[in-house]
Image (tube, rainbow, N blue to C red; front, side, top):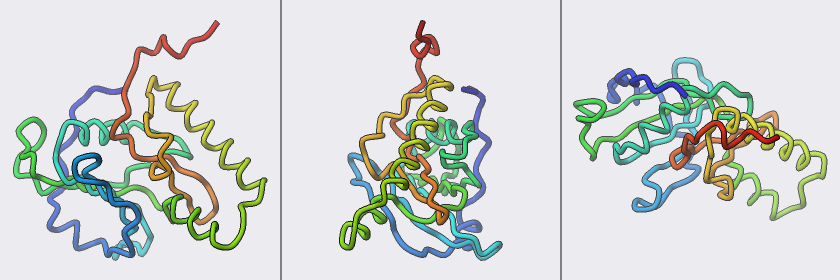
Length: 185
């Protein structure tokens, strides 16, 4: 995991005009998880993106940003861009400042898909097996980077693309461990 500094974000005011909110997907409690996930549409390329808004600039949010920047896996959310309303960046950032992280296109929070499906029918077994395989590959990728996700028990950490692919996000509580922990003889 690279420990290099994160480049200062783009100013929020100009970048927020580029994204139109389609709907709110997940809203965290301010004490527990001061963040919100939204589905947005870009006026520049007309694509739908996930946007995570972190309402308090804390080390956890910067750590999550750093981890997401290092992730390159088909079943882990990828960063498109990020911006902030902070006047200063890094250690000098105002704790009340917000951070917006725009993630590559995806369609829905898994929780929304499950709720909608629960009203009508069950998921087909092949779909569930495919999702399980994707999640195992993503977790294996995290472990290859010595990252423990810590929120895999929460459905709010998962997102589904229009093609039916699962993506893991929400690395706010993830931690980097000693790589030796994941070596088995």
